[in-house]
Image (tube, rainbow, N blue to C red):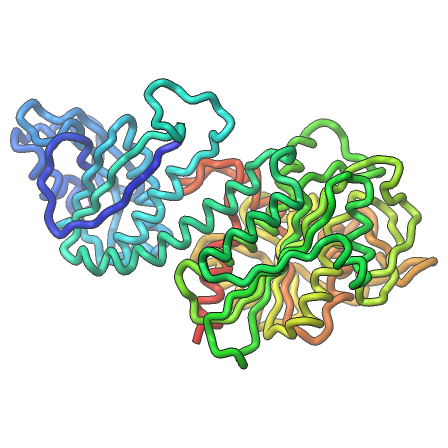
Length: 495
């Protein structure tokens, strides 16, 4: 059962039942705010028994005394609150969510907790929302659930600058919505979310003022996108290319562009994948999910930037019409590609989308995201996305954004020596260079379709799905990339 969280902020609150949460620090493990909800003084004893000392992200949860105005009282440790980053305040919010239990009313007392700003309170609220997310759309409802299968929880943050909190939270709420959208898309089963249905989700962004254009198979044939179209040949579900445009700056300002791989399900094609674990390939559109989530955030918070989001949407399936190893296709750029492995399909989708993006929009920078290779998981595990780029400044900006959001990236090499691995005897290039340096040769392949535009490729195969649970994410789909790229835009490209 999911929690439907309603966040509000108040300068003063009167506690009457429900759960009261207060923050404890190393200096003051039991805050005065918490003691105000415990007139009988039982909380000190409970804290001593539990060994709670206010360390960062520690918790203690007790039943309130009989004469207390609350039903339960919980403390969440902050360590030294003056040293907490924005992301760490989000983690505190996640810890608050973890102690909600069956409470339908939660009061978070921040009056003397050492919260440095309204921004920190808003970050806590964002962390709480992100931790509360769950995907149980297809689970049978239980009698205690609301009509939509969720349980409503009201959370009131008490802070002396309530109006400042509300203003700061408006931006965080947009981020929460974008991450939730990305997570939902990755979690959806492929029988529900095909290329057409995914494009329809992009179309819904028009309600936020986004311009959305959907290219059909016929449109892409006119553009000679044979690489992208070749991936979809084995599926009865037609491909789509969704173009999202947000105009938040002056018309003359060049846009920043984001391109996502949207393979809604990947069997591997004729080079079919092993059956074990193939169900996870419903998430092979994590790059496209991140792009649509980001575009939602930019529109919802009215970002002062011109941005383009392009997602190539296909299903890589198997039938008699599917492309074969040994086939040669001509990309939109005119370069020819020998298909060595039909399971190296994401780069075929991206190469045409990158060409289209450059030719039509001439962006200031271009970043693509893709769950592209298993090789990047071998190299970096689930804690960093692979970063490949032709531009040092862009790479540094992405790295900084990753440090702020803790959606971290690690720069990997590119170089002409890797080109030799994808040179083909029969075409301009092969779509795979073999086992060695698999993530690098995939990036080197994409680089051949990028001209002079500052460009970065993020391989998010290890971070978009199946990554470890954290204080702010308990979902199989993480929504990785939405917060990273929103921070990148905010810090570097907004006017």
